[in-house]
Image (cartoon, rainbow, N blue to C red; front, top):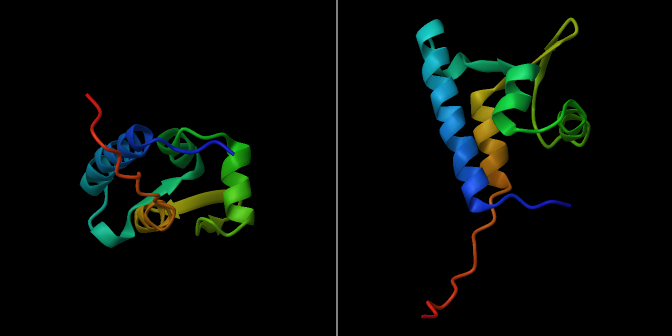
Length: 94
């Protein structure tokens, strides 16, 4: 299993923020912002297969309309927060 670095996590949060800002301009209600599957895999920098595994294992909530999959921005933030691993405090060695 490949662990996410703090830099990668922060990059994802930054990209989500940018995507959220763009989507807020398109949608009126902040709590109703969704990404489709393609947008989700681009923001998270993952494969379609990994997104499918996350859905199958119930790691991420989603909505499905016909064959189209959508993820709530709130659910993406919640998934990242639930899986956040704080780094150990390491002594400053100079």
